[in-house]
Length: 369
Image (cartoon, rainbow, N blue to C red; front, side):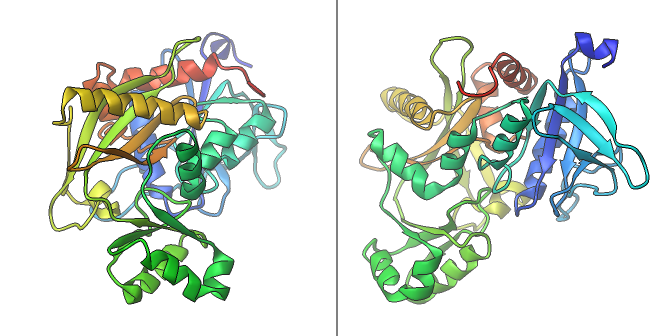
C-alpha cells in the first residue's frame, strides 16, 4: 500500500450496473467525481458494465447525456474483482497475473435500481468488509421494493395511499381477480414496476384496457408490479441526512416538484431529458405543514433503518393532508438533482454533501450495527 494511501482514504466511486437505470447512475457519478476533494481522498472510478462486469474506468469515459444519447460504462477497461473478506480491489486481464490495487476504505455507490440500490451490492460490500455510503442491506432492499416499503411505513404509523401489488404468478394465473382489485381503487391509477426507479416503466391507466397494457409495460422492467390510486395533491419532497454520533437524522427544507411541457406526471423524460420540470425550494406551504412534513420524513428514514441519506416524497392534498408516496435510499445524485438541491438550499452545498457522506461512511462500523 502506498505512503500516499496511508494519509488519504481510498474511495471507490462505483456506478453503472445491469439495470434500466444504468445511465442515470453515470450522471450522478460524473457529478461526484467532479467535486470530490482529490487532496483529501484517493479516488478510483469503478464502472459496472451492463453485463455485470466490474471495470477500472478510463479517462475517456463519458458521464453526461449528449443530445438524447445516454451514457454507459466503457466496458473495455481493466476487469476488477472485490474478493470476499479482503476489501482489496484486484485487477485481472487474460494471460496476466492478477494485480492487487490495494484496500478500499469506502465505496461510494452512485447506483440505482436492482442489483445496485436494492441491498445486493450492499451485501457484497458487507461480505468484503468494506465501508460504503448509504443504507445497509435491509433498508436498501425494503426501500427498493415499493410494496414492502409501504407496509413498513404504514406499520410505523405513516399515511400511505391505497395500492395493489401484482405478483407474477397472480398476473399469469388469476388475472381477473387482480383486475377487479385494481378496479376497486378507482380511476385513474398509476402503474409502476415494484422494484425500479427514475420513473422507469411507469404509466397512467384510466380503464381496464389501459391497465392491462400498463401492467405489461411495467413487467418489462419487473415481474412484480405496483398499482397506486391517483392522489390529488402537490408533489413535495424532503431529503434526510444521517447525523454523526448519536444525533438524530436531519431533514432538509421541503421542495415542490412542478411538471410542465405536456407531461402527465414526473416521468423519466421530465426528470432527465426535457426542461419540463422545476423545483421550488422552499415549497410554498404553511410553516406548520413544512415542519410536520420534515418530521415525517425523519420518521420514514428511521422506520426503514436508513443510513447516509434518503429522499422522501409526499403528496400534499387540497384538504391539508400529507401522504407519503415513497422513500428513495439513493436518490438522483447529480448536483442539480432534487435531494442535493434541497441540501444546498438548506446550507449544505453539493461538494460538502459529498464529503459529509464519505465521512459518515468512514466512521461507521462494518458488519452488524
